[in-house]
Image (cartoon, rainbow, N blue to C red):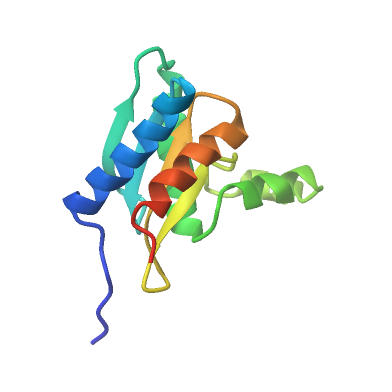
Length: 134
């Protein structure tokens, strides 16, 4: 039987704190979602001033990054480069801002951020994911 690393509440808290600090540093009102490797929500925090829609979008970005095992920007890039068939994929978070969390070379979860420009969402998500990087 194989074993694999999993996110515990300690790592989830570390990711959330790092992402929140990055957003606060830039005064970005975002929502931060953290999922396990199956895309199941482990944490969600909507910062003051962030629109309610960002809560839905951030969860979908995290879920897409976890299930797809890649940054959500890769899906956005594929679609923008003409591969429009991806629009029919079962994912709803194919915008930049979803980042997988890795441990021992395996995806153990993901961070999704929404509320500001996509590249800023990704910056916050990357800082969160890097806080528990291998």
